[in-house]
Image (cartoon, rainbow, N blue to C red; front, side, top):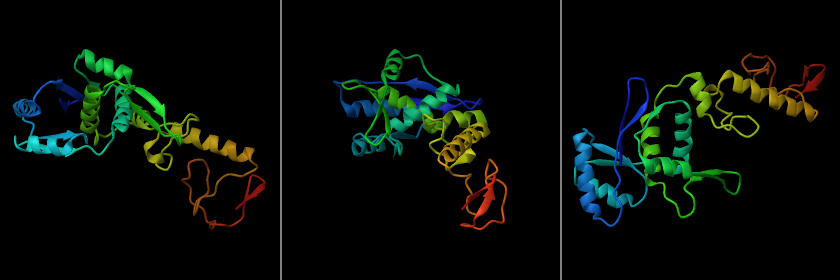
Length: 224
């Protein structure tokens, strides 16, 4: 269990970290954790999907509401790494936490999807708990341009994986991605892109009178 808050500087601060390992009575642990939560004034918590029915029921009996996290562990770790890079976290000194974070592995799944998790036979309970706490604490925070760039997933070619949302990327990333796309198009014998209702001068910001599908002259050539 991890308890934390957002500091005046906008950092996610882990105030307390508790772990109980088997053997033990889950009911007794739930009561103990509930009393700790109440001592910090905490009335609701967020948990993962593991045994969620029992967890919700157990804490509800102690007047603690449970919300199930909507992000999987792998996504939490991706966000957590970005927050670390932005110096947005203050963690407690905990040897097991450090070990579990160091042992996390990034694996490529069929289809190219990346998965971050513990190694085979390993554990990441504490790491997952801290990642979930800090990511959700800062989920609605406002970010600077540099911080947005750090949070944006980038492909191996430097093009944002969420390129359809250019408003979250810095100008440098947008220009780099567009330049790379232009180079690829020119190399394939194509001209610059003309998006519906727009001419593409670099950042797709200037309006055009050209209609979709109209043949226009671009740099001495033609583009549809």
